[in-house]
Length: 459
Image (tube, rainbow, N blue to C red; front, top):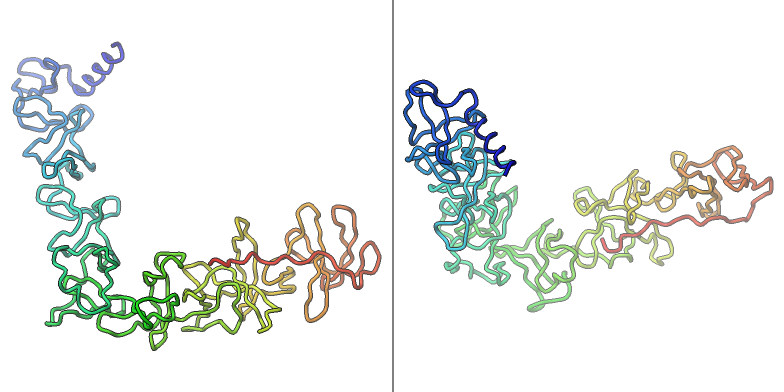
């Protein structure tokens, strides 16, 4: 009880800050009467239906009874005051819905405290739309030209949605290539302003619209008409047997990202994949991952790719054979999934949680040998274990076996004599090749085999 009394006294002090209470016909301010807060002007008259500030500089509202309102809509229901009576500003309010049983409505109050109505409002870098009653809107709005998700956020880019009128689906039955996936949803495109792209009316049932430099076939409400078509029956286990067909009957050519054919979707790592279609619409495919040869590399628009047997460009570290006999191989690096193209030069690559330095030659091959005083094998730098200080690696280069002495940073020891942690002495020539171990010749002797990369077979 003592704490509560102190709290009441503190609130009273805040509300009457700058005044000493009410004296008849003199002081203006807040007064507590019968457990309620009221306000008197400097003539001693009680204030009704008006805003007044407290000593904290925040606005409170006197209702029709002259009592400070709490937890209620006030001033023509354009404002809301919280449990402390303070006008809400720059805040969200969730209330029980007057429209739907068991639902809630969201409102937003701007800097002035007035609820936002009939307009777009940018809140925390996201756009929301509020109706004429101030309720945050979701779904299709403004003549079905915009869409706000379940959180009220305006969407942009490609979105898969139910049609504005789910019961009017007649024009979606046009042709055999409609992408519907049995769920009743279709693809729509929204510009950065949030406005849906629709075709110009020219009397045709399906129309073309250029979006980001590509022509798409759109229905009257903007629904994109696309689909996979199997060339050998209803379905096939091979992606090469499919063509991606636009709604106007033309096959897709070049790069395109989409969901794989429904029958094959379980074979793919991601819900949406990149495919490349030849000028006849045939998806480009390659060998199963882990069995590719350098002859399987494909150059497209100046970049080099490797496709797997599912028609998807690979990424990450890939093992590629250099001959048809599959006896010699090395690493190629195709970057992240976003890149999926052959990269060159130095890269720091994650290998199962550990990052290793790699170097790839101008032809993309993982380099084997010494480059800038570091030793590489199939592109991967070779380092001495941290506990041994120096380590000797045996590499076959140019048809001959060579032993290199490297430190824990992968740097070779040139034209010097060094000792490992056990006191073993290694003498090297100017190329970092081992000449003597503890003053004894090492001709024909082999040491540690180089460490191969960790292959990304599943990327």
